[in-house]
Length: 102
Figure 1 (tube, rainbow, N blue to C red):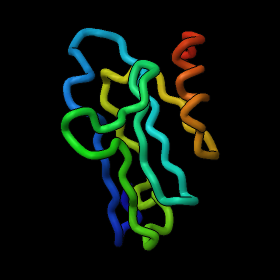
Figure 2: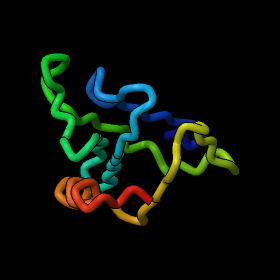
Figure 3: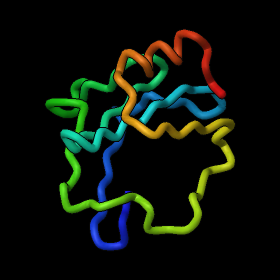
């Protein structure tokens, strides 16, 4: 995310995505505690053996992620849904279990 002055980034746990396979990824950005988390294929990325925890904080100086007029999406992304609030982890897991990939 970038507001033109401040940038925030986080990555999921490594080696979760396989080329040629359909995946369900939820990237949850919660503006209250300023935390980014990933839920991939119904599992919360907790850091595994790679890091102590699976979430990352972003700067409170990030005003809005609306720096660009357009959103660039890779052609491999078959569906994208944006919410006007941070999903709970259980909601992201529930969407995966329900087969909600649209």
